[in-house]
Image (cartoon, rainbow, N blue to C red; front, side, top):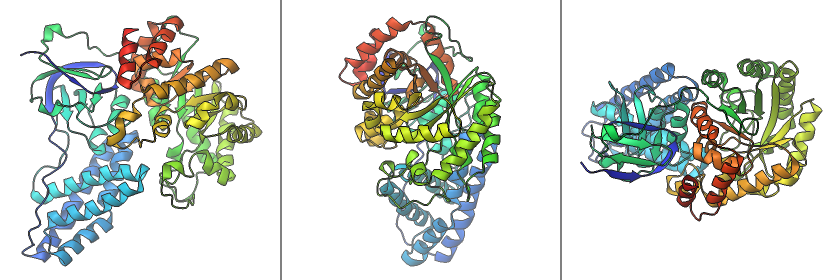
Length: 541
């Protein structure tokens, strides 16, 4: 068989080779609109089918941990929402629909409302479609859509994956993941990186590759090759622990992104010594009241205990109208991504921030390592000054802010005059730079972290760091790409924080380079006119 190369977007580094196992599309055939012969019987079928879906999702949630468990639990709650059953029942009674068509139309109505809200709510539409498909499958007496049980390691291919499916990927059996849709910041990409599974998304033609056919996947270049003989396959061994040595040690630090104490332990297991981003939303979500200072301090202590002599950067609460909290009243926003969120919440309710800063200061006093604190969604030097003064008023040192909007990047030098460090959130910076919702598949290409305009903004921030002599970090998923990590270092970034599973590959790549080499690679990428051109130029530099 002749070799064939399929091109997509590499979103999780690493190479893998193995037989293809195609995942049947998560969508099910749309039910017809034939009138129900016995409406009462159709209504009676709905609740048991929904209950079975809820039970299966809850079972999978109990077997998972961390963010995967959260995704599954949220999907189970969505499936069990009585409003869904109520609206489906009304469609049977009022429009004479069969059970399958009734649940289909009820879910479609809710999904359209979610998509119209944008941001976080639009993302939930994918979960709702997954619930719909599972309930319809139950009503038809066929298996719920999902990832098949793999008896041998294989390359999983699919049109796309539902969040609930991606969350339960078995990293010991899935050699690589290749999908026809998705983008660099999709749930599929983020969860694949967290599991250390090589992944390629937006790969045209992948669903045409037959089951059992051998596929060579490169999660860095975005290539998937068929027709490659086993003897011609390059080394696909994956590193399991952080390997970082060479000329850049002391110039660049590697760190892990952590979302809760469980994630901290995972990071420690792969050899991470630092945390470049500790998200604190896990303490606030799913509650009716804000966590107390004692509750927060206990959780921070649990994370710090994993890194007794390292550096841990805690990000203060990052929520908004797109991630609502019961105890933070916010007016509805037609565009939550551009509304009151991040530090803007604290500006409106300083007490919420003060309790968090007090808890951080308490654990910092007894920590043998370095504890840094940063605020999200800072747009101006004035906002940076306000946060820094408040944090320092609690006795905190090493105070910084996130650079997530173009205004902050363009005035990075002025912002660094107010704080001790900055950290670039490349996911949001890309979204705001290109006015492209990072959860929208239609604009996924614009959220590619290799976009030259995004690299130019990062270069501006890196130059500000060099001028002021202050650290510049990156804690977006861009840092998890080994080649892009080298570009970031060449642009002046001094700290790279990423999903823990990506640390070994990034460390190995940087061990091969020095500062002049990184600068050369960065210059080549900056000179390109397109994201793909930047990738190609960086590889050849």
